[in-house]
Image (cartoon, rainbow, N blue to C red; front, side, top):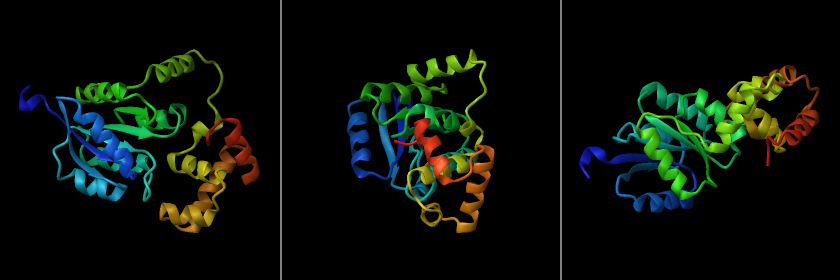
Length: 215
């Protein structure tokens, strides 16, 4: 195994247990090493610049900022970096958004260790990675004559606001967690209600539950 064959990976996840679990899985491979780690979005952006990683494992739900935003910033600075998104959310909730934003692949944290290793090797080779289940869903969409669900018309920030409101969070709490003003979050809420033809947060929550957008 030559030095050039080694795949250097950077892990960005706010849960120490998850990071340690990922490192343990990758420690059992001969061609993948962990070159750095971060526990929030800001550190991920700062520290990846100093690393020589080819692949980043990026949690989509970081405490200080949305993983999609971090992804866009990182791809803007280093477009050749392969970013593999990790999430507790089902693929149909965020995978398409992540891929459109520049991700090389998307994995749920429930994925088997073998699938994680396969995904890393694949995206390191400049290929995209999606699970068989997501591939089937995309294929179904191609042959689907129906219009896309209304929530798919939302921007990333609007969609994030939707899921947070549906989870029971107030505009004030959302503003604090996203480091935005209450006015800005209120504007996102107003826009998404118009786009989705809903009247209030109660209808929004009902829609989210019906379409399984929240756990």
